Image 1 (spheres, one colour):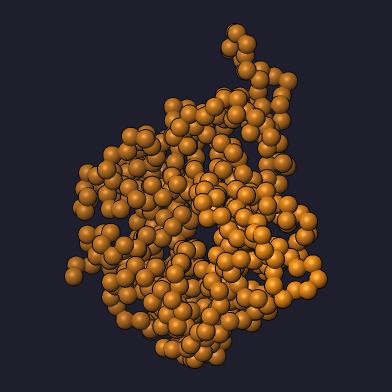
Image 2: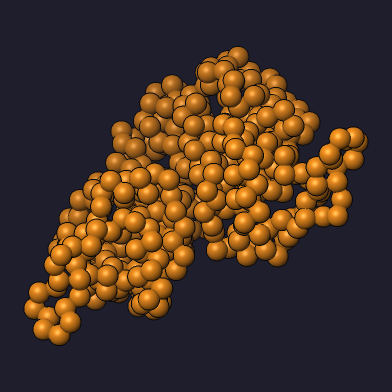
Length: 227
Length: 227
């Protein structure tokens, strides 16, 4: 194989920032490193890119190998290239991110264990993974202001309270209940149902469901959700 | 130097999508390739990443070497990794983009010539550069809907007609004059001046200038510019 550019060249890896929207808050999927460098430290799932796969394919493969999770949707986040970001050698990493419902995960490969960790109580991570997570959180928080993401994480019928908690978990701050309701209903993507939440005796809250056509239109044109 | 991951590994390049907002429309900065592959074909300025530089530093360096242009602001666009995107070997490329005032450019290095080409009349480009340009245009068009970009490309005092033409050039379509004026004034980033355009005899148009404080606030919080 004729190489047109001589070695050395940077190694290329992928890293996956997978957020989980759980009932008790926002989680991040981490592995505990089983090998040096940073053995025993938490890190993002990821690894080296093979010659016959795209970076997105590598991200899906590494995520499944290391955590058992098959991501239906991975979005490219950013490519991190600080020259000293890996103590072994020059490594450039393409980061991907996803927002999912947390599910059972298993360890494998060089991951001693994979687990969901509270996003607001993260331990110090290996490599520059703290920075990668920070950039991913910024992107996620910016995105829910102009794209309808996260909605698919709720059950088919949900209360406005459940939706507000999801937004609060992602934004990391409390939202005013009245303002949130006004803003979310103004978007016109929710259908109010003739049903209320069951198992709640006193003033059970109304249930809503997504209007997928309006949702699609909104996803395409974008919006500004003033919260 | 101990390598932890054996060769072969992908080569890593950068490519620069530099749009120019000219008086006669949107331009794209291209080079004519002086060497194979795709000798004689137009391509984006770019090249291989050195071991001692970040991808952004590589993008700035290659852009200046190949076109003479020093970009003040380059934003990372996306990393392209299709396995067959380069006929020589496996090459992954980190693309950057910028929007500037077109200025004089010079050729150099492996660029036979660098020039500004009309963005709506692009020739077929080398490698997957057509796709990279398409993604950059999408990003640019999405961005002007929720971030105040492009404003700094106008002279300090400008007419609403000049601003509308800039938006039309970027969006690639005509905008309704009344709707545009209403939407842009509602954003509250323009100060109306007590001056009119000179050298225009009949009903000279009013001049405006940016309110930088409002502009900064808007850049931070985002907005939805309904055009």
